[in-house]
Length: 312
Image 1 (cartoon, helix red, strand yellow):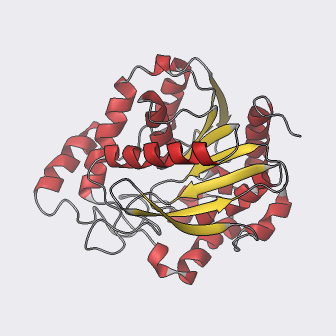
Image 2 (spheres, rainbow, N blue to C red; image 1 turned 90 degrees about the vertical axis):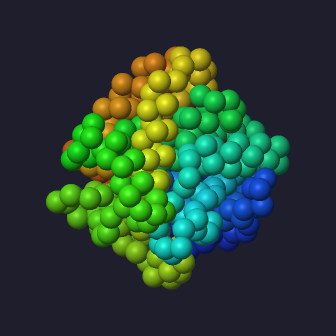
Image 3 (cartoon, rainbow, N blue to C red; image 1 turned 90 degrees about the horizontal axis):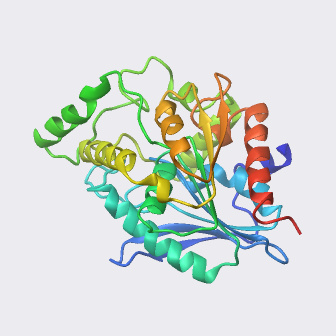
């Protein structure tokens, strides 16, 4: 599987990066890589908060080599999809319903324009939004994969974090950055160690950011935090038992950013859910971890996809 390292810092031949307009006219930066030959199906991959799709081209190459058409877009307000705040590197959103509206419209066009079987994958915040999209009927893929989904967060403040975020959002401009520096406040771990144990893959992200500084998204806004806590609470209270889409959860139990316990509580409520668990060997970015972790995750995802879209 390591052959796809050749794609870690390059846009593949045949892939296109362009703009897709949301229903309100907002331009979302899109990645599209059609399958070579007869397609096996199509994957829509959605990354996490502050991410860009370039970070996952290595994994895209793995699936593309198996016959999948690959599509992704940067979420509104981050990466190459513009900003919603005067602070150029602050990730802001008014409400996660705005993300869902973008996902609903994009996924409908994607399914109409790409070959089936259709699979939606989401990492971290992307995993949260994919699951919420399924619960609300905003998307209807044939299968979905949630990788370290943000269904709860690790916070030193515990249950005080949501009400404190609401108070602080009201004390000033809610679009202002909630903190500076590290991936999360009060962290003793470095950002690198919170994300991956693989220094080369962490360096790939820095390489993309250095190549185009406009892709960098720093801390979230206070309003993003308020919206995130609200959305996580609503998703936990939703009628998830009605979601019949086959699902694979890929969880890092030692995740220092999202609360893996929330995912482990939610997964059994989904009738068609399967679960793959990692221990201390994996940090948050499972698909950007060291090869033993990454290869095991890819093998599980491959097996899950093989059962729904056999390789030709």
